[in-house]
Image (cartoon, rainbow, N blue to C red; front, side, top):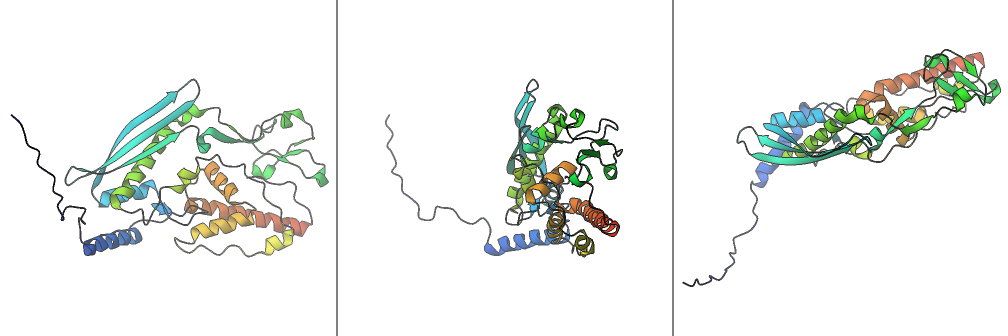
Length: 318
């Protein structure tokens, strides 16, 4: 029995059409914007990473958005590399957001993380005092005989060492490769999960116009440059008399105040990011109180030395 082929006749009314009207789409967007303004907390749920212009969505913010939209995350590790001999760990995670009302998958997101990223591959190594065993060794100024000093203001014992002292100079200082990546396995896995969750949330809530992926995470793919030393003021008296940064206005001014404080400390953008990473600060809001204290400490030191007529003992490093 033979079958005859039915010729295809294109239909003029077949094609992509809008699932909702323009009015509905605008109403949903306004609801999202209102929720962000009235419920989400800047520098906790989202924030501006120094050096960027667009707000980044953080994990707490993604969780709030999923809750308000009735979405439940389903997490699956789709790829894992665990080389315990080489200390190489990498994970790829898929997060599916399921509607609590319908049980259907609304959106998916992918995130990955590995131990070769800058924040995990490298660590900052400081010289250790042979006497008190603290990482408080700094370089002494030439006018005070040079050498090395266990800086008391950093919690050191005040011991001094001559230039060429092998117990100091043979130590490795600066950025070195992390010799214990095994303690970071859980952290790396959780970071991959976080990134996939944020990615899925941005897709499900159509909030990419407001937020971007966590820029702080993305930028860490490139190993951070070593932080430069703080630049000494050409006039300590002038530094002491400089007005303190004005208190940050709520929300939007915190990032700019971080930049202002870092500038006064003599740090550029890379140095500031490296310091925030080393100290464990996730965003500008968390870092700002400590930066204010550093600026205050620097000015008090400058004022004291200006009054005593003594130069600074050493150059402080990040």
